[in-house]
Length: 192
Picture 1: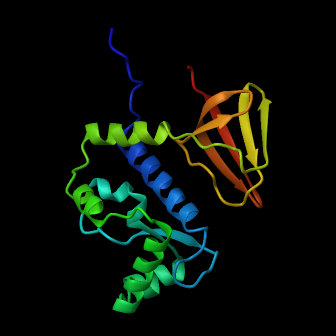
Picture 2 (picture 1 turned 45 degrees about the vertical axis):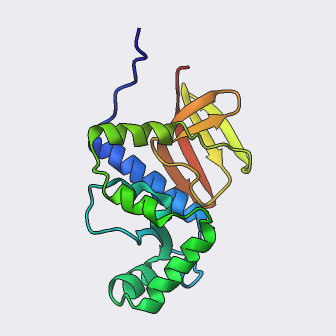
């Protein structure tokens, strides 16, 4: 008997979840700071290496991302992309990604996103659960719903991620609600 995989959500939901997960991992890798000015406000994750087409797997490779504040992203990278700026971003990414391999990104850029490749990326994302070891977290069951509050202003997970929660096991993030200096996650228990 074959192992039946759960249905994939709609392609647009999968792409959004994969993009949000990619952006979260890029910002976390960069210490939630802009690689150009060091700022911590209005951070974005920028596809810096391969951006000419949208339908390739390099879109979800963390090494193909750089954390930039909104101002640096627009003014320095998009409106005035000089050699010094691009080189500064490249050096910062290389410093944070010791296993960076340009050939891998180029190969991924040639890998078209199909339903099958999206399924592989989705499964890989969900098999990488977020752990709560480094965070003060409170798990709460109210009215049959499971909530997780994490004492961190930075998101640790996005909708679609899995989280390993104490006492409840593996759960899927259904909703993320930032609340000042903490984030509240509505979770759904994953049947094992």
